[in-house]
Length: 131
Image 1 (cartoon, rainbow, N blue to C red):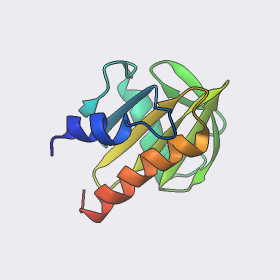
Image 2: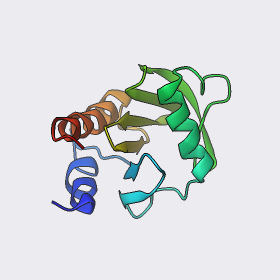
Image 3: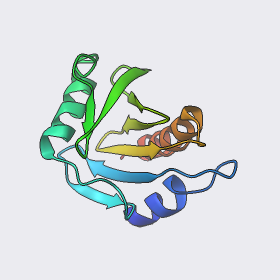
């Protein structure tokens, strides 16, 4: 399966009548493997900041998580595995796999839990595949 198919079929899928606003699979080096059409244009230092938080959990908490120049307040995640961010009625979930980052962005009426489930389920699957 192509990386784009993972984004289109697994991340941008419908769950309880809702879908993510945008999603991407990005290599840990910041290279885009696949993304939805409307995924924000991010800066390399934003991905570096995310990777740094996986290596040093909590490092993004004081400054927030930036993605496409949008600032998300970092909320409870799983140190070294998942980072969750909130902005207004929406947010972002980032799941780290062995080689990549799975990112999902959502807005109401999708709930944070629905976003987490979509992103983390694909991330867990890819980890099981050694990716």
